[in-house]
Image (cartoon, rainbow, N blue to C red; front, side):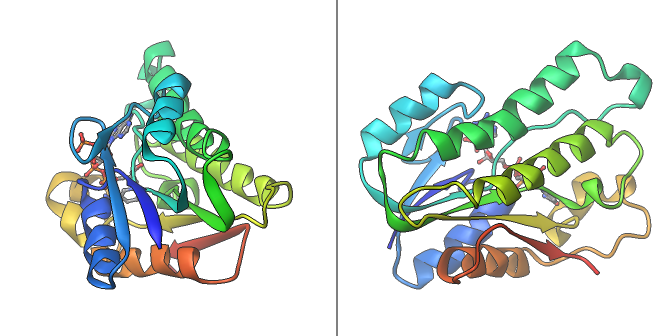
Length: 201
Ligand SMILES: NC(=O)c1ccc[n+]([C@@H]2O[C@H](COP(=O)([O-])OP(=O)(O)OC[C@H]3O[C@@H](n4cnc5c(N)ncnc54)[C@H](OP(=O)(O)O)[C@@H]3O)[C@@H](O)[C@H]2O)c1
């Protein structure tokens, strides 16, 4: 299977790549500055150009999308613009612009995260965007053409990100990146659509 992996060089993307590449799939690695192809998912035209270069494929798996973490009172237009433009609209762009290129019965796997269900300090924009993406997935699953499927993976904090983000998640039990990669695998190779695969109780 030919899989376009966006954010392939990131903490989650690397784990997804390891798992799927080891199983013999063709992985097209995409990043903002790294990988086989570069894209800014916040820019619809950039996403359109990306797919035109790649051509036909079977699945899009996304492990990218930026959000601003800031105290509520400091969440200004720039912070909201980044969060809505990148993690929300970026993922919408990845789905809508893929439609001419993705093969029948293909799939999309998007990313949200625990803070939409279990908020942290400074996580209001992240929570709003994560829930919005989950709503997008539930509704888009009913309207996608070509028998396409779409799911979203919602991890808690990864063990691999503890050093960087651990203090923001007091008392949260982290998950191994390899388990997050398994959720991507389930989404890509399973038969379900409109699902949210959570990696926390
Ligand atoms: N890590 C966690 O514990 C965790 C938990 C729950 C949810 N999440 C969510 O999972 C996603 C990935 O997290 P991560 O920790 O794996 O991130 P990460 O290590 O910072 O990696 C992000 C990846 O996305 C790419 N990227 C960033 N902005 C982009 C853009 N505008 N257009 C295209 N590619 C872009 C980067 O490309 P380059 O390498 O080329 O710069 C990089 O490969 C985020 O949305 C995050 O909120 C993460």
